[in-house]
Image (cartoon, rainbow, N blue to C red; front, side, top):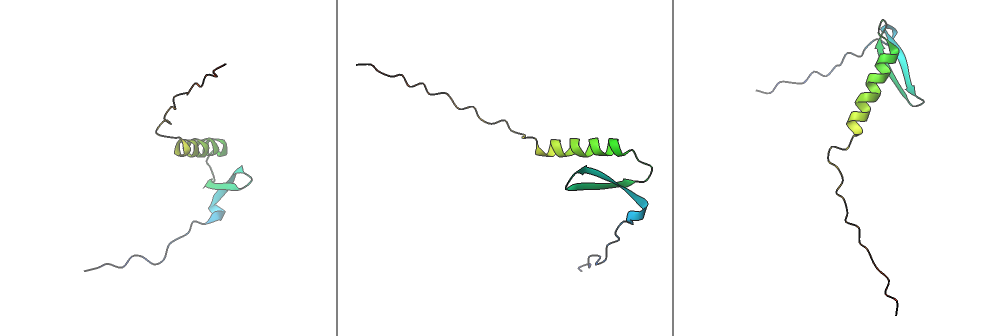
Length: 70
């Protein structure tokens, strides 16, 4: 009827990975033989794409108020 979800998850062994520092608060882990600069650039590109606005903001028409001199 219903299947139980797996209750245990295997975490990666950090001794088999190398740490890449993106900024002060962000670190990612990649395979030991991988290129850290490429991993950093791919991470930043993915982050930039995620934060990109998919719909352009609507342009508000400028309202011109002229002063009337009496």
